[in-house]
Amino acid sequence: MASPAVAEKQVMVVGMDDSEHSTYALEWTLDHFFTPFASNHPFKLVLVHAKPTPSSVVGLAGPGAPEVLPMVEADLKKMATRIIGAAREFCLSKSVHDVIVDVVEGDARNVLCEAVEKHHASILVVGSHGYGPIKRAVLGSVSDYCAHHAHCTVMIVKRPKIKH
Image (cartoon, rainbow, N blue to C red; front, side, top):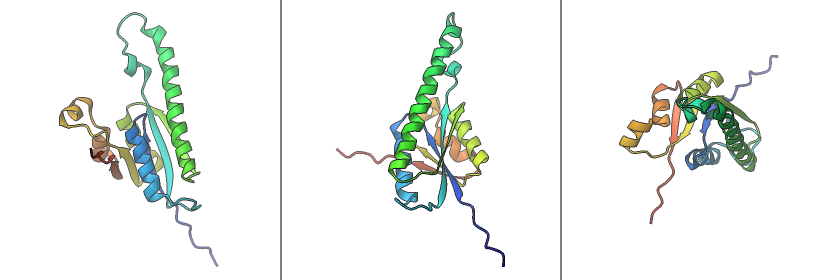
């Protein structure tokens, strides 16, 4: 008698940056989709951090840029390590141990949509910075871009407004 096929877990990708918005989105996701102390969670969790390129942070105009780029690269690597380390520790504190981590250099919009494809994700979770229409038009919205371009369900997690 053949054993029944084991259904593979669906993949949930969570975008991480250095903002409190992505930290809140991860916390919300763990609280709502990952039962504490359960060994069999319904999703495989993938944390993705888009590390900016040094040239996108500094710009290549002006003398001295070549000397500055290695220092900027080192700082960006340290920042990525800190962000992913804190996210991994937070997952462990919520008893989620099986976490895949991806740090990919590039623009967050593209990195997250590519991560969805790479990991065959069924859900992408991103935090919302809560930009208004003008800031969103000028800065661009990662969550808005992903909602329109990712080939999966996109969950945009907003922090509740604090009542005064």
